[in-house]
Amino acid sequence: MTLAARNALVTGSTSGIGLATARALAKEGANVMLNGLGDAAAIEKLRADMAAEFGVKVLYSGANMLKPDEIAAMVAEAETTFGSLDILINNAGIQYVAPVDEFPIDQWDRVIAINLTSAFHTMRAALPGMKARKWGRIVSTASAHSLTASPYKSAYVAAKHGLTGLTKSVALEVATMGITVNCISPAYVWTPLVEAQIPATMEARGMTREQVISEVMLDRQPTKQFVTVDQVAASALFLCSDAAEQITGSNLVIDGGWTAQ
Ligand code: NAD
Figure 1 (cartoon, rainbow, N blue to C red):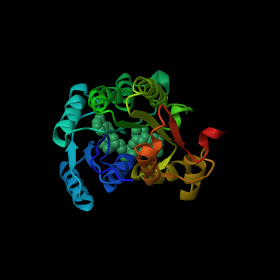
Figure 2: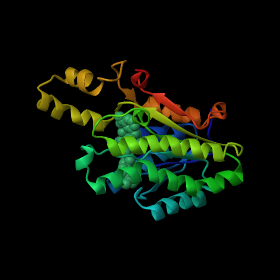
Figure 3: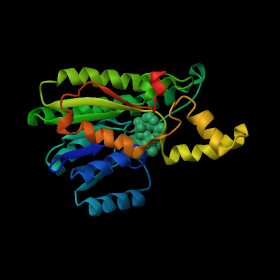
Figure 4: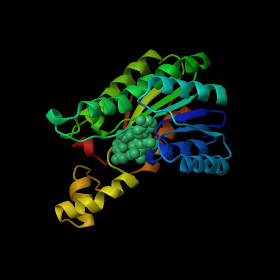
């Protein structure tokens, strides 16, 4: 597959799944706009290294996914600088854990805004161009929590369930226009964020590293293995390919069997 001549935007791509997806798209020849939070010098190095490694244009937007006007400006900048925006990956996301009756209202609003509403704003801004060119790929990173729930994650679960509904609705609106709209639902993905939680959990529960991984983190993941960022990126890449042009409105689950239970 080649995505040369395609232009992509990946929200939340300064680390983790988004970064792996941006790299996978660039490796196939797509120009990529990165987005996300982080240290400015480190992000600039990431951008320049990626452009040099893959020989594509790599841009960066620091748009905050909490701010609709910044999101619209980011999409406009990608279209103006690249000449089009063909691939949109909605990946930025955050988590907050608390019992619902103690859930801070501002944290509820942040989780819904970044994990769900930002995808409405990116799609709203990107679709007119995709419709005009009669080609587009929209892939959103949902979660196993788009299909199932865990206690204390009410905002995240509501946002991810909402993202699958948004995906289905928009997929139907643009089904005849050469544009597909899908989500990907991974369970626990091995990221530095996950690795960083292990020592504290070992300490808090008096467990070994292996016990924390299999009895706490992978308790509900039947394969007892983490999903990797590259596996999620490969699925996003597939959904952007011509082979996937009849896949739309779907939710591709990568969860080691979690939601089969
Ligand atoms: P991560 O923390 O490594 O990456 C999150 C990205 O979002 C970062 O680039 C961060 O800068 C960006 N971001 C956060 N707030 C932002 C804001 N206000 N504006 C712009 N960017 C912002 O996490 P990850 O694990 O790679 O998660 C990526 C996506 O995958 C999220 O939507 C998450 O819900 C989903 N997901 C993760 C897992 C997992 O186990 N890691 C499992 C299922 C789904």
